[in-house]
Length: 537
Picture (spheres, rainbow, N blue to C red):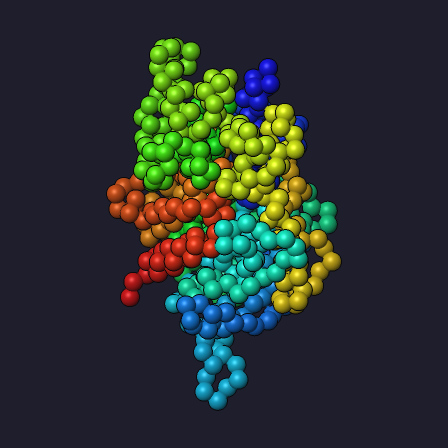
């Protein structure tokens, strides 16, 4: 009975690091079904397009700093401020907090300070960066990989004990692009104005419109309309970025040069297993195999070479496993036994667990059972990381060891950094991960799942210069890399447009940049991507 309950629970949380898609904890959240919201269309004549907003930066704190990248000292200007978002009548709707970094030029001879910018706007890219959730502030990418300072972690990516500190980020993106970190309304220090309802901001389309308006206001205020422009999002931030790619183009005529998708979810059907949705099970399988490989649980021939093992798992998952699942109860007994044997081979789970799950292994079952004999659970955001299971009979993990250790690191270091380095002072709590954005409006109820893949395809068709970099970690049980492969392969693009897409893989989790070697590799790939996406002379 215990296993039947365990395999029946189809809850899924999808924080961009963090927030659950459904309200409530896993203990109270309803089981996922075959029905999830569909992406509202943006090109219907009936849709009422909101008027543009007004804004003027307030409470701005401007400081300067330096960071060394590849032996080169880079000077920069940092701006931490609020952008008031007002309607055309001047009524305040919300304030959006942001942190921006502009690279400064060399110090002219005879001067004590560098020039204002490293290059004129035509030649200096700018990248707007955000995390996901919904409900996650931009601090994860800000202090994890992109900004001039980053959290100090162990080489394997695990967090040290408190107190935590920031160190110079020699892999910052500032050598190739200016950066603007956006905290959407309800995250960070960003808040709705007094009297404004959360429903005006907390939804797929609502969020896209507000972030788009912020971008328009920023490039207007800081005279960056002529700059090459990029977006970078993580997890639900990739959902936001895909929606923005078309909305910015259609609404404001802002054509992007490129988008960086980190730990991607564009099609939620690939991540939400349920009674009427077998698709995610094969797409998770290679990540199960990678995780079992990392913990040394596979047969010797599969432990020998991770890449070969992943290739085998991918081919079997899509060519055999998915086909078997489509047969349902009509699957022949001998074929069923073969599937059980292969699933046990790739996942290292007992055949009895696989049978009781009816061949369909949800991520939370894998997290609970891979190391159950050692009373440990596997992390969701990084399956390399494990933690003691205090409730081994509980039918789902009671916590995520790959999230709980990082939350205080990011929270403590940003609160200190904002005040002592950026000189920005606020008594508001900085919402690193917030429940205040719930309920999130995913659109009208109906058959199907939220998907913004069509928005990305449309943007790439309308703007053939748009390039996309997808970055995935092999040990990510929140947004598995094979699901991203599946989505990319179904974008239905011409060969020349497909050439604008690149997918890179790393031996890390959802935040693959936590691992020292992968932080360096990701930065190198990102720098190449931005240079290739810039207009040629």
